Image (cartoon, rainbow, N blue to C red; front, top):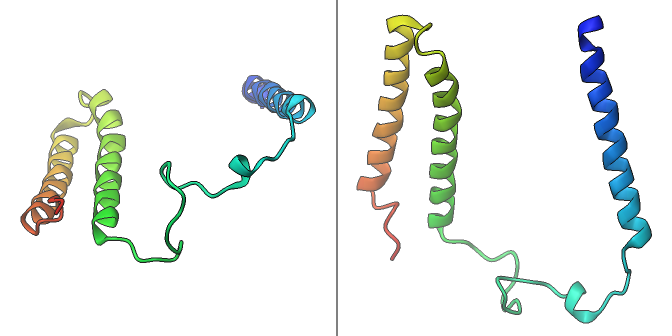
Length: 117
């Protein structure tokens, strides 16, 4: 348990600092609500349609692509750091992972999911 004392102290200091900063913002912030602050904001324009309207499927496909490549990076970084310790099995398993991601990317590309029309 003695190894975790430093982590516990760090956690307490971070919690205290966050509480102090949050408390100071409530004390010193101005609370004057004007129509500009409480109005709805949509990309710099006044909202012109219902918030429950349908979105183009293109937005969802791009977000899925982002998640796929974000996950790829989170797996690639630790793999690259330990590449000399994972032997050939670790190397080829990552190559299979990258191949599956590449096949998915090529499939979306062929289907025209990346073309904005």
